[in-house]
Structure formats: C-alpha cells, structure tokens
Length: 593
Image (cartoon, rainbow, N blue to C red):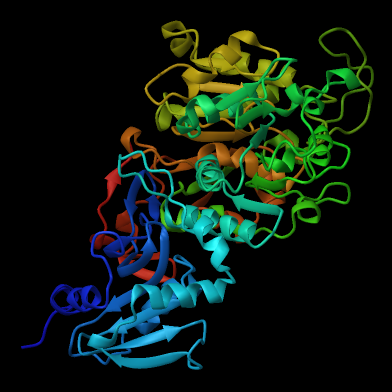
C-alpha cells in the first residue's frame, strides 16, 4: 500500500523527527502558512490566489527557523520535492534557512547550503534525520554567531498570548537585524513597504535586545506627533512604565525606552536642545522612523541628534530610501539589511493591489494662454504666456479645472461607492481648500446629509486635524473624503482608504511611494481588498518603479472607464506569479458597491 503525502508526513516523518530529538510542540510546525495568497481584481470582483505553505518547518525555537521539509508520496523519487523546497529556501527567500529536506517516507535528500560536510546534497535513511543541536551548530557556524552571542539570538520574541506571530518577512527583518548587531554592525537600514508593519518589527527588535540587556536605553525618533503617539499606545505598549515620551524641557532620565518627536528634542536656540541633557553615551540604540525624511541629510535636525549619540547603534526604518546628490540613506546606514517591497507584499497577499485610472484633461494637454489684457477674478492682469501642468494650481489657478477634477472624482464614487474613504492630494493648502469646496458643490446631497462628507485635513486646520482619527477609523463613516497636501503623506494608517486621487505635481520617487502607501493596507472585514489611483498629473508615468511597486491590476483610460469594465467571465485562467490558475478554482467576491 502506497502512503499519501499526509500519511507519509504523520505516520513516518513526524515520528522520525521526534526520535531524532525534535520537540513536536516547539520545534516542529506542520502546514506552515507563509503567505495569504495574492488578491486578484477583475472589474468589481476580487478573489485570493493560492496561499503558500511549507509542509514542515523545523525551528531551533519559536521564530528562529532552521529547515524546511517538503513531503512527497512514496511513489515519487526522494528528490521530487527538492525543487519546491529550494524555492522556499533560495528563490523566494521566504524562510532564509540554510537547510532543506525532500522526502518520500523511504529516505530523505538533505540540501545543506553551509557545505559543512563538503557536499551540497546528501541522501540519508529516515532514521538518520539530524538532531536539533546538530542543525543549530551548523546554523551558528554558517551565520558567524559566536557562542557568547547565542544568548542574544535566542532571546524570546514578545508574546501577548493571543497567538499573534510575526509574518515570515517580519521575522526575517527582526532576526537579520539582531544577528547583525551581535556581529558588531552599528548602522542598519530596513526597507519595508508601507503597511507591512515596520513599527511592530521595530518593537520586536527592541524587545529582544532590551530583554537580553544588550541594549539598555533606547530612543525611538519620529517626525510626526501621530507617529509617536500611535507607537506608544499600540505596538510599544508592552514596555509600560519603562517607557516615556519626551515632551518637557526637563527630562526624567530614570526611564529605559524614550519616544520623541525630533522637533521636541531640538530647538532653534542652543539652550533649547533637549537631547543635550543626555550624555553622548546615554542611549545604546536609536530607531529612526521614516528615516528618508531627514536622517540622511547632514544638515538636518535628525543628524544633529544622531551625531550627538554617535556611539549608539542606529537603525533606520523607511518604505522609501532617499538617494540624491545631497541626501543619502545608504551612505549613512549602508545597504539595506533587508528589503520587503510593495510588489512582494502584493504578491504575498499582505498588501492591496491597485488599479490606475489616468486622465488627460484638455488644458493639461494643450496649455493655456490668456488673451492680451485678460484679468483674473481680482482684476489683476494675467501675464501673457503659455501655462502648462507645472503652473496649474500654483502660478495659475484655473477654477474650471479644479471643478472638473472634483466632478470626475464624484462621478467615480457615485458609480462605485459614495462612502469609500478617499484622499485627494493637492498642490498646497489653498488648492486643498478649493478642492474641498469643489467636491462639496459637486455633491450637495451628501453635504446636506453630513457637513463632514468632505473635509480639508491640512497642518493649518485644527478642525480638519481633529477629524483625522475619525477618517482613519474603519467604523467611522465621516469624513469620507479628505483633501490634503503634505500632512497625510506619511504616518496615516488609513486601512479602509480605497481611492487615492493625485492632483499634485509630485517631485520625487520617495514622495510618490509614500502617497501610494496610504492605500496599500488590506482590511477584509470592511471590504477593503484593493484600491484605485485616479491620476490627473501623470505621476504614475513619471515615478512608476515596477521592481518595487509591481504591476497595476489595470491601467484604465479615465474617459472610457466603467465600474464593470472587466469580469472573471472574460477569461478562463488568471496568471498569478507566472502560474495560470483556472478562474473557476478561485472564490470570487463582488465589491460592496
């Protein structure tokens, strides 16, 4: 009788592993989920592609994987599963483990990337599986982990008892960072796309280094109050009374974890520089959130703080490393120790895919030349020259153009869902206010229902900023539409935002990635599986980066768009990461239009 894969796994492999000394509760995980399955979008229908699983993962301890095992039926040759196991090991780097096994229950093929035995692959009998200690010693030698550093590497992750565990890429980032620090690296850069849990990742790094007493006093720096407050109240809350936020001129030095708005730690006058109350060796570790916004520039206030605490380990977190002739993250931190891109997040199903609807408004195409002596609404003569997209909503305001953009946005929402959370990025605060008025005038029935249907959320508006928490809260209906310029480009965790409108001339790849990141989070509970970009300023053409951003689900002409422009019935298969999946094999759901 030939055993099935399940029989081989449960009746042969698991007993053999237990016999070799592996603990079934803490060191062996069966059918380990690695991804959520890419979200596929067709018109207003969505489905998830197949999830990726590893048959068996062997761990030294929780969150420190050593090897993956691919199990095949007994009728197959022992090496049949090796290609798939190697896919996890090298091509995908999903587990970042040096060891892989393929087995048919009769024998196993061992792939040893460390070459510790002198061979890459060796075949062995089922009762000869390596022991946990044998693989751990090989792992340490391969990674260059000294015995005295092993205690740091083995420090437990924080576990709140809820069953929440880091995703595979978060564990990779955490483990690589801790290992680098134990090996003496003191400048580290992590690049992780918006929505992938950078702050949670930072928390676990700090927790392990703090608990092992490798780093005893830590400073977390951010440049937005909302980032500091969210971090303190959410991901960093387990630090409890060991943690404080720097916000007074006289600092209590009895804490171990400090969070600070960098503006609060510096000042225009020398005596107001709070960070100088701390001795240069006070902090062992500094985490710089959204480090592309300043730390790389030698002239920035960030760098003044970092230079003061130069003996500490510095970890930069960003979704968009900044490289210009004046500003360089890589020159300061070195090459990223780990990168998790938007493209990878979308392929794994952890981030939302996106559509792009492109608009070429007539005035943007043709330019605008005023007649001789033509005046503006204030009676001032308009300089006679040709104005183009670079000028609109800055040098020259065309109210008809603003009204047309507003009309297109409102029409889109009417045909999809008028209550889909929407962010409209404008050139400046004045433009954001004009856009708010134009949206209000284009949807009077919604404004009469609730005056907060559209609001300007900008740095100068206390009323707007007061509504920011309501905008990002999934259960709050209002505000629905936010017009903004810079305030909402970073640090706004808008999990249910389904529409990003670009009516801003974006100046850099970094800025583009940050803006697009407002839509990348998935929230299945509230029907958020993808998002749409309406592009009125050709930003998606200028800054599209397929290696990092992936390929849009659709690129649509705004003049011909309809809400059901494509359905699963139009094709028999869909391609997911190079594999054709039959349409009928996927569980399609209709968007809540």
